[in-house]
Image (tube, rainbow, N blue to C red; front, side, top):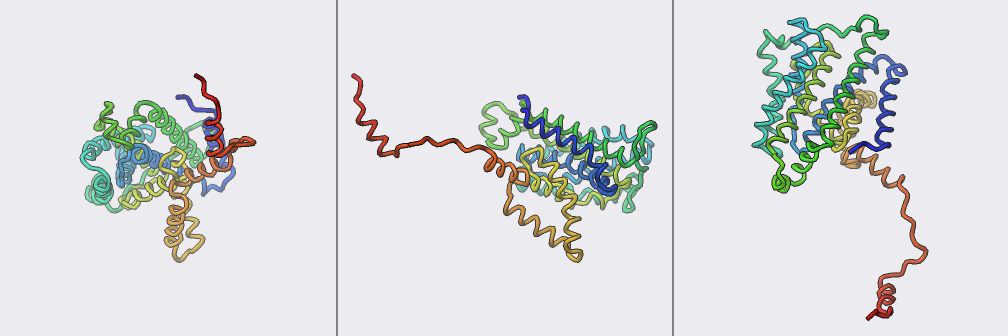
Length: 340
């Protein structure tokens, strides 16, 4: 199925905004927008896994930690460049995600959520224990990203464009993946698994692949998260990161790819806005905002915008000048002579 003109127009507008934005905003916002791209990649993985397949994961912070530490260890200990470290991180997280996906096949609902949450809780302790490799409590510093020779950009703008370019590639790859048989199988298993299995859909195959692909995206996000910060530590990838990513998916809209970008913007900038509203208790402002958004836009910001568009933008069907009521129409039909 080919995308329609409206979708291509929205994508073109988004690409144009992303390309121009770092030149019209302050430099510190460019740094924040790099984090937005990393969050968007991680949230996209949750949209595919939870929104499209119905598998609840609270452990994506662990996959991000694995991706970030793979890049950091390869750069710090082996001197590998980042353009090699990021694909290696994606492969490592994909393999780990497939393994977790095989275990997750035996669990559903809250049991799967608790199992993946325990993974996110255990990851920081694991990283602190093996300090010879991970740096332990103190973490590990890595070299900041530098601009290649001959590129007329500073390091911050170069990292911005590289991060968003990779974001565009993974969004395109994910869109192509879910528009075919793979996406139809995921949605069928989410909506009616018994009927899906009766029509020949293999739940073990597709659910495991969904977990693996979601972990690949989380690993890429964690790699760019580490490259942007130029530092990794167990506290950087705490279990709160998994909850934050899930919040972004729900607030942005867990049923649409656009929700990944909107959700990433929310979880990056909403805490900063809450800090400005009330410097004494920003968490209270943040929590109240989340509650209100869930009350009035339960399907996410993108879902709420789509509902408003369908309600006000679509033209209403024209009514006939005279439409007889049901009793009148019945009497007219009875008065017509029958043909024999």
